[in-house]
Length: 329
Ligand SMILES: Cc1cc2nc3c(=O)[nH]c(=O)nc-3n(C[C@H](O)[C@H](O)[C@H](O)COP(=O)(O)O)c2cc1C
Image 1 (cartoon, helix red, strand yellow):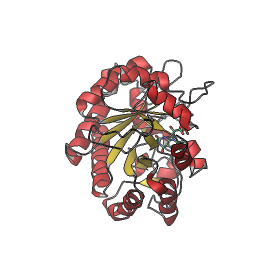
Image 2 (image 1 turned 180 degrees about the horizontal axis):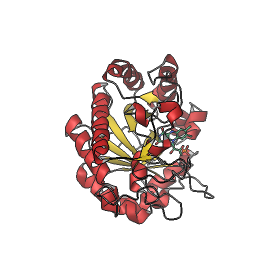
Image 3 (image 1 turned 90 degrees about the vertical axis):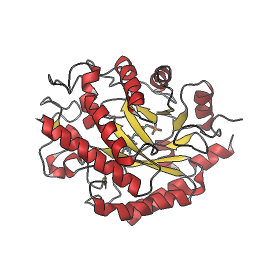
Image 4 (image 1 turned 135 degrees about the horizontal axis):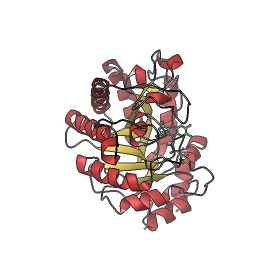
């Protein structure tokens, strides 16, 4: 049997096949982050036919202070739950499962968009943006943990099948994980265990909110690919801790300044990361990056590089990609 068509029948998040649409920000929401008709139509089109077993909805901001860009989806208010139900329903009606990604942009936010000074683990320049954020106090860290918790509960109440915590691409949790941006000398900094303390507290709080049975995923930027940045050795330690803390699935990406490895191409360019992480955890691992052909996905899965394959830009460009890919096997 094709590896891509094999159901994932173990764990809390069971899936019909191994194909995932990874989160991709579309800027199609209203200016304040409310669900628009445009975004409902977009997810309807992408999920039609149910060929993609899991759709991970683009990053949503958990608080205005952590909003990354205009038109970004919001998960910051209870009043949004009703319209988010429509989004979950559309994806379900088409036969796919739906997870929502929740995020705080930290120092990658800008005052022009949020109206607030950007914050980060330390007052050091964000390598992507160049701006120096305000260092978070411990009380502010606790508030952010509560905001992740409240956001995760809204995701559950809106009827999604799981929630994904965003710790990649240079946003707040990646900023804590990365030695480039985390220079703290308190318990939220230092070695890897210090730098993921906030993650572990977020995971615990989210778990308290959503209960034991609700799938919690974590997107980990597993290597910064910048001098002095985080490496796979850090991620192996982190991944084990995340699994112990109750994360159900790891969604792997990388690159502090995006989702690429500068100068490296090819289908599945993060496979060395997922392969190394699969050796240390037993929860399913998603590999995304550069995959444009069903045969390449098939090969990566059959070689055991990952449990699930994310296809982003190819699906973004061609809504029939998944149908064609699956029918070609
Ligand atoms: C337009 C665009 C928006 C993206 N937005 C997000 C996002 O909201 N959250 C996230 O974790 N990754 C985001 N990504 C990264 C993708 O999920 C994916 O990792 C990346 O596109 C590489 O996979 P691909 O080569 O299959 O496109 C985005 C990528 C693109 C192209």
